Amino acid sequence: MIRFDSADRCDFLLVSGDAFVDHPSFGAAVIARVLEAEGFSVAVLCQPDWHGVDDFVRMGRPRLGALVTAGNLDSMVAHYTVAKKRRSQDAYTQGGVAGKRPNRALIVYANLVRQSFPGLPVVLGGLEASLRRFAHYDYWEDAVRRSALLDAKADILVYGMGERAIRDIAARLRDGAPLEGIRGTCVTRKTPPNGLECPSFEEVRDSRESFARAVMLQNDEHDPVRGRTLLQKHGDTWLVCHPPARPLTTPELDAVAELPYTRAPMNTTLPVPAIEEVQFSLIHNRGCFGGCHFCSLSYHQGRMISTRSRESVLREAAALTRRDDFKGYIHDVGGPTANMGHCSCEKQKKQGLCKRNCLTPTPCPHVDSSHTDYLRLLRALRALPGVKKVFVRSGVRYDYLLLDQSGQMFSELVEHHVSGQLKVAPEHCVDSVLDYMGKPHWSAYRQFEELFERLNRKAGKKQFLVPYFISSHPGCTLEDAVNLAETLHKMGCHPEQVQDFYPTPGTLSTCMYHTGLDPRTLEPVFVAKTPRDKALQRALLQVRNPKNRGLVEAALLETGREDLIGYGKRCLIRPRGSPSGAPGKKRRP
Image (cartoon, rainbow, N blue to C red; front, side):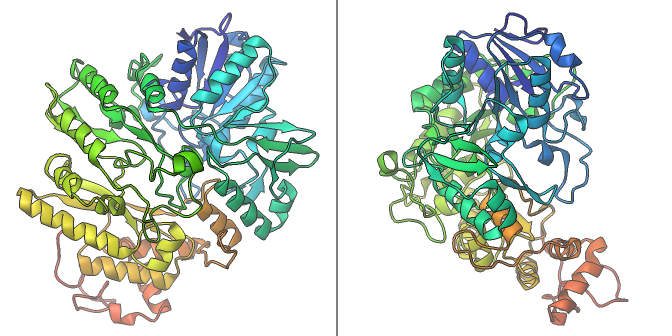
Protein backbone atom coordinates (compact mmCIF):
# COMPACT_ATOMS: atom_id res chain seq x y z
CA MET A 1 0.00 0.00 0.00
CA ILE A 2 1.22 3.50 -0.90
CA ARG A 3 -0.55 6.40 0.76
CA PHE A 4 -0.30 10.19 0.50
CA ASP A 5 -2.65 11.24 3.29
CA SER A 6 -1.10 9.83 6.46
CA ALA A 7 1.70 7.68 7.83
CA ASP A 8 -0.34 6.51 10.83
CA ARG A 9 -0.22 2.71 10.95
CA CYS A 10 2.01 2.70 7.86
CA ASP A 11 5.32 0.90 8.18
CA PHE A 12 7.47 3.58 6.53
CA LEU A 13 7.34 7.28 5.79
CA LEU A 14 9.16 8.09 2.53
CA VAL A 15 10.24 11.75 2.31
CA SER A 16 11.33 12.94 -1.14
CA GLY A 17 12.62 16.18 -2.63
CA ASP A 18 10.83 15.34 -5.90
CA ALA A 19 7.17 15.20 -6.76
CA PHE A 20 6.11 11.55 -6.74
CA VAL A 21 6.17 10.09 -10.24
CA ASP A 22 5.16 6.43 -10.19
CA HIS A 23 7.53 5.30 -12.92
CA PRO A 24 10.56 2.96 -12.84
CA SER A 25 12.85 5.85 -13.85
CA PHE A 26 12.22 7.52 -10.47
CA GLY A 27 14.04 6.09 -7.49
CA ALA A 28 11.44 6.94 -4.83
CA ALA A 29 8.76 5.10 -6.80
CA VAL A 30 10.97 2.03 -7.21
CA ILE A 31 11.72 1.83 -3.48
CA ALA A 32 8.07 2.38 -2.54
CA ARG A 33 6.90 -0.34 -4.94
CA VAL A 34 9.61 -2.77 -3.81
CA LEU A 35 8.57 -2.36 -0.17
CA GLU A 36 4.90 -2.70 -1.13
CA ALA A 37 5.70 -5.97 -2.91
CA GLU A 38 7.39 -7.21 0.28
CA GLY A 39 4.20 -6.58 2.24
CA PHE A 40 5.14 -3.26 3.83
CA SER A 41 2.98 -0.14 3.69
CA VAL A 42 4.52 3.20 2.71
CA ALA A 43 3.29 6.76 3.22
CA VAL A 44 4.84 9.29 0.83
CA LEU A 45 5.58 12.91 1.78
CA CYS A 46 6.86 14.83 -1.24
CA GLN A 47 8.51 18.25 -1.13
CA PRO A 48 7.31 19.16 2.36
CA ASP A 49 7.67 22.66 3.76
CA TRP A 50 11.10 22.47 5.40
CA HIS A 51 10.72 25.65 7.47
CA GLY A 52 9.06 23.67 10.25
CA VAL A 53 7.77 20.23 11.22
CA ASP A 54 4.07 20.80 10.49
CA ASP A 55 3.99 18.72 7.28
CA PHE A 56 5.88 15.90 8.99
CA VAL A 57 3.85 15.62 12.17
CA ARG A 58 0.63 15.92 10.16
CA MET A 59 1.49 12.57 8.56
CA GLY A 60 1.72 10.79 11.90
CA ARG A 61 4.43 8.48 13.19
CA PRO A 62 5.19 5.41 11.03
CA ARG A 63 5.71 2.06 12.73
CA LEU A 64 9.19 1.14 11.52
CA GLY A 65 11.15 4.07 10.12
CA ALA A 66 11.57 7.00 7.73
CA LEU A 67 13.22 6.80 4.32
CA VAL A 68 14.73 10.09 3.14
CA THR A 69 15.88 11.02 -0.36
CA ALA A 70 16.70 14.35 -2.01
CA GLY A 71 15.22 12.96 -5.24
CA ASN A 72 16.58 11.86 -8.59
CA LEU A 73 19.23 14.62 -8.55
CA ASP A 74 21.62 16.04 -6.00
CA SER A 75 19.61 18.94 -4.57
CA MET A 76 22.43 21.45 -5.18
CA VAL A 77 22.62 20.49 -8.87
CA ALA A 78 18.83 20.74 -9.04
CA HIS A 79 18.99 24.27 -7.62
CA TYR A 80 22.10 25.84 -9.16
CA THR A 81 23.81 26.17 -12.52
CA VAL A 82 27.55 25.62 -12.82
CA ALA A 83 27.86 29.40 -12.47
CA LYS A 84 26.16 28.99 -9.05
CA LYS A 85 23.11 30.91 -10.20
CA ARG A 86 19.64 29.82 -9.14
CA ARG A 87 17.79 27.78 -11.73
CA SER A 88 14.43 29.14 -12.80
CA GLN A 89 12.81 25.71 -13.24
CA ASP A 90 12.84 22.30 -11.60
CA ALA A 91 11.83 19.42 -13.86
CA TYR A 92 11.10 17.16 -10.89
CA THR A 93 8.50 19.49 -9.36
CA GLN A 94 4.86 19.76 -10.37
CA GLY A 95 4.46 22.62 -12.81
CA GLY A 96 8.26 22.84 -13.15
CA VAL A 97 8.34 25.36 -10.29
CA ALA A 98 11.76 25.99 -8.73
CA GLY A 99 12.50 26.26 -5.01
CA LYS A 100 10.28 23.49 -3.66
CA ARG A 101 13.11 21.68 -1.90
CA PRO A 102 15.88 22.95 0.42
CA ASN A 103 19.59 23.02 -0.30
CA ARG A 104 21.18 19.76 0.83
CA ALA A 105 17.71 18.31 1.14
CA LEU A 106 18.94 14.99 2.49
CA ILE A 107 20.29 16.59 5.67
CA VAL A 108 17.40 19.03 6.15
CA TYR A 109 14.69 16.40 5.77
CA ALA A 110 16.48 13.91 8.04
CA ASN A 111 16.83 16.48 10.80
CA LEU A 112 13.13 17.37 10.51
CA VAL A 113 12.18 13.70 10.76
CA ARG A 114 14.22 13.36 13.94
CA GLN A 115 12.59 16.46 15.42
CA SER A 116 9.13 15.17 14.54
CA PHE A 117 9.58 11.56 15.63
CA PRO A 118 12.34 11.18 18.25
CA GLY A 119 13.91 7.73 18.20
CA LEU A 120 12.49 6.76 14.82
CA PRO A 121 15.11 5.00 12.62
CA VAL A 122 16.13 7.20 9.66
CA VAL A 123 17.41 5.70 6.39
CA LEU A 124 19.08 7.88 3.74
CA GLY A 125 19.13 6.97 0.05
CA GLY A 126 19.18 8.22 -3.52
CA LEU A 127 21.82 9.89 -5.65
CA GLU A 128 22.69 12.60 -3.12
CA ALA A 129 23.34 9.95 -0.51
CA SER A 130 25.53 7.93 -2.88
CA LEU A 131 27.69 10.88 -3.92
CA ARG A 132 28.07 12.28 -0.42
CA ARG A 133 28.60 9.08 1.56
CA PHE A 134 32.26 9.86 2.30
CA ALA A 135 33.92 13.16 3.16
CA HIS A 136 33.58 15.03 -0.13
CA TYR A 137 34.38 18.25 -1.94
CA ASP A 138 31.38 20.56 -2.13
CA TYR A 139 31.63 22.88 -5.14
CA TRP A 140 29.02 25.31 -3.84
CA GLU A 141 30.91 25.93 -0.58
CA ASP A 142 34.33 25.37 -2.16
CA ALA A 143 35.15 23.25 0.86
CA VAL A 144 35.40 19.64 1.99
CA ARG A 145 32.32 18.51 3.92
CA ARG A 146 31.75 15.53 6.17
CA SER A 147 29.79 12.47 5.11
CA ALA A 148 26.10 13.33 4.76
CA LEU A 149 25.36 10.45 7.13
CA LEU A 150 27.01 12.31 10.00
CA ASP A 151 25.46 15.68 9.22
CA ALA A 152 22.01 14.09 8.91
CA LYS A 153 22.58 12.02 12.09
CA ALA A 154 20.73 9.18 10.41
CA ASP A 155 20.96 5.52 11.33
CA ILE A 156 22.05 4.15 7.96
CA LEU A 157 22.78 5.35 4.43
CA VAL A 158 21.97 3.28 1.33
CA TYR A 159 24.14 3.94 -1.71
CA GLY A 160 23.75 2.70 -5.24
CA MET A 161 20.66 0.94 -6.54
CA GLY A 162 19.01 0.14 -3.24
CA GLU A 163 16.50 -2.68 -3.77
CA ARG A 164 18.55 -5.36 -2.03
CA ALA A 165 19.57 -3.11 0.85
CA ILE A 166 16.09 -1.70 1.50
CA ARG A 167 14.54 -5.17 1.66
CA ASP A 168 17.14 -6.22 4.22
CA ILE A 169 16.79 -3.01 6.25
CA ALA A 170 12.99 -3.24 6.29
CA ALA A 171 13.06 -6.85 7.44
CA ARG A 172 15.55 -6.10 10.21
CA LEU A 173 13.58 -3.10 11.45
CA ARG A 174 10.43 -5.26 11.50
CA ASP A 175 12.23 -8.02 13.41
CA GLY A 176 14.14 -5.72 15.77
CA ALA A 177 17.50 -6.88 14.39
CA PRO A 178 20.59 -4.61 14.24
CA LEU A 179 21.50 -2.84 10.98
CA GLU A 180 24.95 -4.42 10.75
CA GLY A 181 26.97 -5.59 7.76
CA ILE A 182 24.43 -4.83 5.02
CA ARG A 183 26.06 -4.52 1.61
CA GLY A 184 25.50 -1.22 -0.17
CA THR A 185 25.16 0.72 3.09
CA CYS A 186 27.15 3.02 5.36
CA VAL A 187 26.80 3.29 9.14
CA THR A 188 28.69 5.09 11.91
CA ARG A 189 30.45 3.37 14.79
CA LYS A 190 32.64 4.39 17.69
CA THR A 191 34.69 1.21 17.29
CA PRO A 192 35.35 0.18 13.68
CA PRO A 193 35.09 -3.38 12.31
CA ASN A 194 37.82 -4.84 10.16
CA GLY A 195 38.29 -2.90 6.94
CA LEU A 196 40.52 -0.76 4.80
CA GLU A 197 41.12 2.68 6.27
CA CYS A 198 40.81 5.82 4.14
CA PRO A 199 42.46 9.09 5.08
CA SER A 200 40.25 10.73 7.70
CA PHE A 201 37.91 13.67 7.19
CA GLU A 202 40.42 15.93 8.89
CA GLU A 203 43.23 14.68 6.64
CA VAL A 204 41.30 15.11 3.38
CA ARG A 205 40.07 18.52 4.52
CA ASP A 206 43.60 19.74 5.20
CA SER A 207 45.65 17.90 2.54
CA ARG A 208 44.84 17.81 -1.14
CA GLU A 209 47.10 14.83 -1.68
CA SER A 210 45.27 12.91 1.06
CA PHE A 211 41.97 13.86 -0.56
CA ALA A 212 43.16 12.50 -3.93
CA ARG A 213 44.35 9.26 -2.35
CA ALA A 214 41.03 8.80 -0.57
CA VAL A 215 38.97 9.38 -3.72
CA MET A 216 41.05 6.92 -5.73
CA LEU A 217 40.71 4.28 -3.01
CA GLN A 218 36.94 4.80 -2.79
CA ASN A 219 36.55 4.48 -6.56
CA ASP A 220 38.78 1.40 -6.79
CA GLU A 221 36.85 -0.41 -4.04
CA HIS A 222 33.44 0.40 -5.54
CA ASP A 223 33.10 -3.14 -6.84
CA PRO A 224 30.46 -5.68 -5.83
CA VAL A 225 32.84 -8.65 -6.18
CA ARG A 226 36.27 -7.59 -4.94
CA GLY A 227 35.35 -4.41 -3.03
CA ARG A 228 36.30 -4.23 0.64
CA THR A 229 34.76 -2.47 3.64
CA LEU A 230 36.14 1.07 3.85
CA LEU A 231 36.58 3.05 7.05
CA GLN A 232 36.93 6.81 7.34
CA LYS A 233 37.32 8.55 10.68
CA HIS A 234 35.43 11.77 11.38
CA GLY A 235 36.65 13.08 14.72
CA ASP A 236 35.96 10.28 17.21
CA THR A 237 33.41 8.58 14.93
CA TRP A 238 34.09 6.03 12.24
CA LEU A 239 32.19 5.95 8.97
CA VAL A 240 31.86 2.31 7.91
CA CYS A 241 31.11 1.79 4.21
CA HIS A 242 30.29 -1.83 3.44
CA PRO A 243 31.03 -3.21 -0.05
CA PRO A 244 28.51 -2.47 -2.84
CA ALA A 245 25.46 -4.65 -3.18
CA ARG A 246 25.50 -7.25 -5.92
CA PRO A 247 23.68 -6.06 -9.06
CA LEU A 248 20.24 -7.53 -9.53
CA THR A 249 20.06 -10.66 -11.64
CA THR A 250 17.96 -10.57 -14.81
CA PRO A 251 14.90 -12.17 -13.13
CA GLU A 252 15.24 -9.78 -10.18
CA LEU A 253 15.51 -6.72 -12.44
CA ASP A 254 12.54 -7.97 -14.46
CA ALA A 255 10.50 -8.24 -11.26
CA VAL A 256 11.37 -4.68 -10.18
CA ALA A 257 10.63 -3.26 -13.64
CA GLU A 258 7.24 -4.98 -13.79
CA LEU A 259 5.86 -3.78 -10.47
CA PRO A 260 2.47 -2.05 -10.85
CA TYR A 261 3.69 1.47 -11.65
CA THR A 262 1.04 3.84 -12.97
CA ARG A 263 3.76 5.58 -15.06
CA ALA A 264 2.31 8.96 -14.09
CA PRO A 265 2.67 11.68 -11.45
CA MET A 266 0.59 10.92 -8.36
CA ASN A 267 -1.11 13.22 -5.87
CA THR A 268 -0.66 16.26 -8.13
CA THR A 269 -2.90 18.19 -10.48
CA LEU A 270 -0.01 19.78 -12.39
CA PRO A 271 2.36 18.04 -14.81
CA VAL A 272 5.88 17.06 -13.74
CA PRO A 273 8.19 17.90 -16.68
CA ALA A 274 10.67 15.10 -15.96
CA ILE A 275 8.13 12.45 -16.96
CA GLU A 276 7.80 13.74 -20.52
CA GLU A 277 11.00 12.22 -21.92
CA VAL A 278 10.60 8.83 -20.19
CA GLN A 279 6.83 8.40 -20.30
CA PHE A 280 7.06 6.04 -23.28
CA SER A 281 10.65 4.87 -22.80
CA LEU A 282 11.85 1.44 -21.73
CA ILE A 283 14.70 0.82 -19.29
CA HIS A 284 16.71 -2.10 -20.58
CA ASN A 285 19.88 -2.00 -18.48
CA ARG A 286 21.69 -0.53 -15.50
CA GLY A 287 25.32 0.40 -14.92
CA CYS A 288 27.99 1.62 -17.30
CA PHE A 289 31.54 0.38 -17.83
CA GLY A 290 32.45 3.46 -19.86
CA GLY A 291 34.15 4.97 -16.82
CA CYS A 292 33.95 8.68 -17.73
CA HIS A 293 35.78 10.49 -14.96
CA PHE A 294 33.29 13.36 -14.74
CA CYS A 295 30.19 11.15 -14.52
CA SER A 296 28.67 10.39 -11.14
CA LEU A 297 26.92 7.34 -12.55
CA SER A 298 29.73 4.87 -11.93
CA TYR A 299 29.80 6.02 -8.28
CA HIS A 300 26.06 5.32 -7.99
CA GLN A 301 24.91 2.54 -10.32
CA GLY A 302 28.40 1.12 -10.73
CA ARG A 303 30.32 -0.23 -13.72
CA MET A 304 28.81 -3.73 -13.72
CA ILE A 305 25.86 -4.16 -16.06
CA SER A 306 22.45 -5.56 -15.12
CA THR A 307 20.09 -6.36 -17.98
CA ARG A 308 16.42 -7.16 -18.27
CA SER A 309 15.21 -10.11 -20.31
CA ARG A 310 13.84 -9.52 -23.79
CA GLU A 311 10.53 -11.05 -22.73
CA SER A 312 10.13 -8.60 -19.84
CA VAL A 313 10.84 -5.54 -22.00
CA LEU A 314 8.40 -6.80 -24.63
CA ARG A 315 5.67 -7.24 -22.01
CA GLU A 316 6.19 -3.66 -20.86
CA ALA A 317 6.16 -2.40 -24.45
CA ALA A 318 2.97 -4.32 -25.21
CA ALA A 319 1.34 -2.72 -22.17
CA LEU A 320 2.35 0.71 -23.50
CA THR A 321 0.59 0.02 -26.80
CA ARG A 322 -2.67 -0.50 -24.92
CA ARG A 323 -2.61 2.98 -23.40
CA ASP A 324 -4.96 5.57 -24.89
CA ASP A 325 -2.18 8.20 -24.92
CA PHE A 326 0.36 6.02 -26.74
CA LYS A 327 0.88 7.26 -30.31
CA GLY A 328 2.99 4.37 -31.57
CA TYR A 329 6.42 5.77 -30.71
CA ILE A 330 8.76 4.24 -28.13
CA HIS A 331 11.04 7.14 -27.29
CA ASP A 332 14.00 5.17 -25.97
CA VAL A 333 15.24 1.68 -25.18
CA GLY A 334 18.29 1.84 -23.02
CA GLY A 335 19.67 3.03 -19.74
CA PRO A 336 22.79 4.93 -18.69
CA THR A 337 24.40 3.73 -21.93
CA ALA A 338 21.89 2.24 -24.34
CA ASN A 339 24.14 -0.22 -26.16
CA MET A 340 25.75 -1.83 -23.09
CA GLY A 341 23.59 -4.92 -22.91
CA HIS A 342 25.84 -7.17 -20.85
CA CYS A 343 28.96 -7.18 -18.67
CA SER A 344 32.11 -5.97 -20.36
CA CYS A 345 33.74 -9.39 -19.98
CA GLU A 346 32.98 -12.77 -18.48
CA LYS A 347 35.73 -12.86 -15.87
CA GLN A 348 34.35 -9.87 -13.95
CA LYS A 349 31.40 -11.95 -12.73
CA LYS A 350 33.79 -13.95 -10.55
CA GLN A 351 36.80 -11.66 -10.19
CA GLY A 352 35.21 -8.24 -10.27
CA LEU A 353 36.04 -5.32 -12.51
CA CYS A 354 39.63 -4.47 -13.39
CA LYS A 355 40.97 -1.22 -12.01
CA ARG A 356 41.79 -0.11 -15.55
CA ASN A 357 39.11 1.42 -17.74
CA CYS A 358 37.44 -1.13 -20.03
CA LEU A 359 37.39 1.18 -23.07
CA THR A 360 39.97 3.95 -22.68
CA PRO A 361 42.51 5.06 -23.65
CA THR A 362 42.21 1.96 -25.83
CA PRO A 363 39.67 -0.89 -25.48
CA CYS A 364 40.72 -3.84 -23.37
CA PRO A 365 41.21 -6.92 -25.61
CA HIS A 366 38.88 -8.90 -23.31
CA VAL A 367 35.87 -6.62 -23.86
CA ASP A 368 32.84 -8.51 -25.18
CA SER A 369 31.74 -6.29 -28.07
CA SER A 370 28.69 -8.30 -29.15
CA HIS A 371 25.49 -6.29 -29.61
CA THR A 372 23.43 -9.32 -30.63
CA ASP A 373 21.03 -9.40 -27.67
CA TYR A 374 20.29 -5.69 -27.82
CA LEU A 375 19.76 -5.87 -31.58
CA ARG A 376 17.33 -8.78 -31.20
CA LEU A 377 15.40 -6.76 -28.63
CA LEU A 378 15.12 -3.75 -30.95
CA ARG A 379 13.96 -5.98 -33.81
CA ALA A 380 11.32 -7.59 -31.61
CA LEU A 381 10.06 -4.19 -30.44
CA ARG A 382 9.81 -2.95 -34.03
CA ALA A 383 7.64 -5.96 -34.85
CA LEU A 384 5.11 -5.37 -32.06
CA PRO A 385 1.59 -4.49 -33.24
CA GLY A 386 0.85 -0.88 -32.52
CA VAL A 387 4.49 0.22 -32.57
CA LYS A 388 5.35 2.59 -35.41
CA LYS A 389 8.89 3.54 -34.43
CA VAL A 390 11.46 2.63 -31.80
CA PHE A 391 14.06 5.30 -31.04
CA VAL A 392 17.34 5.08 -29.16
CA ARG A 393 17.88 8.42 -27.42
CA SER A 394 19.87 7.59 -24.30
CA GLY A 395 23.62 7.72 -24.68
CA VAL A 396 25.27 5.50 -27.27
CA ARG A 397 28.89 4.73 -26.49
CA TYR A 398 30.25 5.12 -30.00
CA ASP A 399 33.70 3.61 -29.39
CA TYR A 400 32.03 0.47 -28.02
CA LEU A 401 29.66 0.38 -30.99
CA LEU A 402 32.65 0.47 -33.35
CA LEU A 403 34.03 -2.69 -31.71
CA ASP A 404 31.04 -4.70 -32.96
CA GLN A 405 32.64 -6.62 -35.82
CA SER A 406 29.39 -7.54 -37.53
CA GLY A 407 28.40 -3.90 -38.06
CA GLN A 408 24.73 -4.90 -37.91
CA MET A 409 23.94 -2.89 -34.80
CA PHE A 410 25.28 0.35 -36.26
CA SER A 411 23.57 -0.25 -39.60
CA GLU A 412 20.15 -0.92 -38.06
CA LEU A 413 20.55 1.92 -35.59
CA VAL A 414 20.93 4.34 -38.50
CA GLU A 415 18.17 2.75 -40.57
CA HIS A 416 15.52 2.34 -37.88
CA HIS A 417 16.28 4.01 -34.56
CA VAL A 418 17.46 7.60 -35.10
CA SER A 419 14.87 10.36 -34.86
CA GLY A 420 16.67 12.67 -37.29
CA GLN A 421 19.45 13.42 -34.83
CA LEU A 422 21.69 11.14 -32.80
CA LYS A 423 23.20 12.52 -29.60
CA VAL A 424 26.78 11.52 -28.90
CA ALA A 425 29.39 12.85 -26.49
CA PRO A 426 32.95 13.14 -27.83
CA GLU A 427 33.45 15.98 -25.25
CA HIS A 428 36.76 17.24 -26.72
CA CYS A 429 39.24 16.72 -29.54
CA VAL A 430 42.59 16.95 -27.72
CA ASP A 431 43.72 13.49 -26.67
CA SER A 432 45.48 14.63 -23.51
CA VAL A 433 42.26 16.28 -22.30
CA LEU A 434 40.26 13.19 -23.26
CA ASP A 435 42.64 11.09 -21.14
CA TYR A 436 41.82 13.26 -18.12
CA MET A 437 38.12 12.80 -18.93
CA GLY A 438 38.35 9.04 -19.35
CA LYS A 439 37.01 9.34 -22.89
CA PRO A 440 38.14 7.70 -26.17
CA HIS A 441 40.56 9.59 -28.37
CA TRP A 442 39.34 11.92 -31.10
CA SER A 443 40.20 9.48 -33.88
CA ALA A 444 37.46 7.14 -32.61
CA TYR A 445 34.85 9.87 -32.96
CA ARG A 446 36.00 10.78 -36.47
CA GLN A 447 35.82 7.12 -37.44
CA PHE A 448 32.31 6.91 -36.00
CA GLU A 449 31.23 10.12 -37.75
CA GLU A 450 32.53 8.91 -41.12
CA LEU A 451 30.77 5.56 -40.80
CA PHE A 452 27.55 7.25 -39.64
CA GLU A 453 27.51 9.42 -42.77
CA ARG A 454 28.27 6.44 -45.00
CA LEU A 455 25.45 4.38 -43.47
CA ASN A 456 23.05 7.31 -43.88
CA ARG A 457 23.86 7.56 -47.57
CA LYS A 458 23.37 3.82 -47.96
CA ALA A 459 19.98 3.99 -46.20
CA GLY A 460 18.95 7.06 -48.19
CA LYS A 461 18.51 9.11 -45.03
CA LYS A 462 19.50 12.61 -44.01
CA GLN A 463 20.28 12.37 -40.32
CA PHE A 464 22.76 14.27 -38.21
CA LEU A 465 25.00 13.75 -35.21
CA VAL A 466 24.54 16.14 -32.29
CA PRO A 467 27.88 16.08 -30.48
CA TYR A 468 28.22 17.31 -26.90
CA PHE A 469 31.32 19.04 -25.58
CA ILE A 470 32.54 20.08 -22.15
CA SER A 471 34.47 23.28 -21.54
CA SER A 472 36.92 23.90 -18.69
CA HIS A 473 37.40 20.27 -17.73
CA PRO A 474 40.50 19.75 -15.57
CA GLY A 475 43.50 19.32 -17.84
CA CYS A 476 42.08 21.56 -20.57
CA THR A 477 44.25 24.63 -21.09
CA LEU A 478 43.21 27.71 -23.05
CA GLU A 479 45.42 26.46 -25.91
CA ASP A 480 43.49 23.18 -25.87
CA ALA A 481 40.21 25.11 -25.99
CA VAL A 482 41.43 27.08 -29.01
CA ASN A 483 42.46 23.80 -30.66
CA LEU A 484 38.93 22.45 -30.11
CA ALA A 485 37.34 25.62 -31.51
CA GLU A 486 39.57 25.45 -34.60
CA THR A 487 38.80 21.76 -35.13
CA LEU A 488 35.05 22.24 -34.85
CA HIS A 489 35.19 25.22 -37.23
CA LYS A 490 37.01 23.13 -39.83
CA MET A 491 34.32 20.45 -39.49
CA GLY A 492 31.51 22.98 -39.86
CA CYS A 493 30.28 21.94 -36.42
CA HIS A 494 28.74 24.73 -34.34
CA PRO A 495 27.51 23.39 -30.99
CA GLU A 496 24.36 24.99 -29.67
CA GLN A 497 24.48 23.21 -26.32
CA VAL A 498 27.69 23.43 -24.33
CA GLN A 499 28.26 22.31 -20.76
CA ASP A 500 30.84 23.88 -18.50
CA PHE A 501 32.43 21.21 -16.33
CA TYR A 502 30.25 20.82 -13.23
CA PRO A 503 32.13 19.44 -10.19
CA THR A 504 29.76 17.01 -8.48
CA PRO A 505 30.77 15.04 -5.36
CA GLY A 506 32.62 11.76 -5.70
CA THR A 507 33.97 11.86 -9.27
CA LEU A 508 37.62 11.67 -10.31
CA SER A 509 37.23 14.86 -12.34
CA THR A 510 35.90 16.73 -9.31
CA CYS A 511 38.89 15.49 -7.36
CA MET A 512 41.15 16.97 -10.08
CA TYR A 513 39.24 20.24 -9.92
CA HIS A 514 39.60 20.54 -6.15
CA THR A 515 43.14 19.27 -5.69
CA GLY A 516 44.86 20.16 -8.97
CA LEU A 517 46.13 16.57 -8.93
CA ASP A 518 45.33 13.53 -11.06
CA PRO A 519 44.28 10.99 -8.38
CA ARG A 520 45.59 8.13 -10.53
CA THR A 521 49.16 9.45 -10.54
CA LEU A 522 49.18 12.42 -8.11
CA GLU A 523 50.71 14.47 -10.91
CA PRO A 524 49.66 18.16 -11.20
CA VAL A 525 46.73 18.99 -13.49
CA PHE A 526 45.90 22.42 -14.90
CA VAL A 527 42.45 23.61 -13.79
CA ALA A 528 40.56 26.61 -15.18
CA LYS A 529 38.85 27.95 -12.06
CA THR A 530 38.42 31.70 -12.38
CA PRO A 531 35.20 33.02 -13.95
CA ARG A 532 37.25 34.65 -16.71
CA ASP A 533 39.20 31.49 -17.57
CA LYS A 534 35.99 29.47 -17.70
CA ALA A 535 34.20 32.11 -19.77
CA LEU A 536 37.03 32.16 -22.33
CA GLN A 537 36.88 28.40 -22.81
CA ARG A 538 33.10 28.36 -23.07
CA ALA A 539 33.04 31.22 -25.60
CA LEU A 540 35.45 29.33 -27.86
CA LEU A 541 32.86 26.58 -28.27
CA GLN A 542 30.29 29.07 -29.55
CA VAL A 543 32.31 31.47 -31.66
CA ARG A 544 29.36 32.38 -33.87
CA ASN A 545 27.47 33.93 -30.99
CA PRO A 546 28.03 37.71 -31.32
CA LYS A 547 28.00 38.04 -27.53
CA ASN A 548 31.14 35.92 -27.38
CA ARG A 549 33.21 37.93 -29.84
CA GLY A 550 35.22 39.88 -27.25
CA LEU A 551 35.99 36.74 -25.25
CA VAL A 552 37.02 34.79 -28.36
CA GLU A 553 39.32 37.60 -29.46
CA ALA A 554 40.88 37.80 -25.99
CA ALA A 555 41.48 34.03 -25.98
CA LEU A 556 43.11 34.10 -29.42
CA LEU A 557 45.35 37.02 -28.50
CA GLU A 558 46.30 35.45 -25.18
CA THR A 559 47.34 32.19 -26.87
CA GLY A 560 49.15 33.90 -29.78
CA ARG A 561 46.62 32.65 -32.33
CA GLU A 562 46.01 35.92 -34.19
CA ASP A 563 46.13 33.80 -37.35
CA LEU A 564 42.54 32.79 -36.54
CA ILE A 565 41.35 36.41 -36.75
CA GLY A 566 40.72 37.38 -40.35
CA TYR A 567 38.68 36.69 -43.48
CA GLY A 568 39.88 33.23 -44.51
CA LYS A 569 37.83 30.10 -44.18
CA ARG A 570 39.96 28.89 -41.30
CA CYS A 571 39.47 32.06 -39.23
CA LEU A 572 37.18 32.01 -36.23
CA ILE A 573 36.31 35.71 -36.13
CA ARG A 574 36.76 38.77 -38.33
CA PRO A 575 38.92 41.75 -37.33
CA ARG A 576 37.26 44.49 -35.34
CA GLY A 577 35.32 46.96 -37.46
CA SER A 578 34.53 44.38 -40.14
CA PRO A 579 30.97 43.74 -41.34
CA SER A 580 29.05 41.37 -39.10
CA GLY A 581 28.86 37.66 -39.84
CA ALA A 582 31.11 34.68 -39.46
CA PRO A 583 34.23 34.45 -41.62
CA GLY A 584 34.48 31.94 -44.39
CA LYS A 585 31.74 30.03 -46.11
CA LYS A 586 28.67 29.28 -44.05
CA ARG A 587 28.24 25.54 -43.58
CA ARG A 588 25.41 23.40 -42.31
CA PRO A 589 25.08 23.09 -38.51
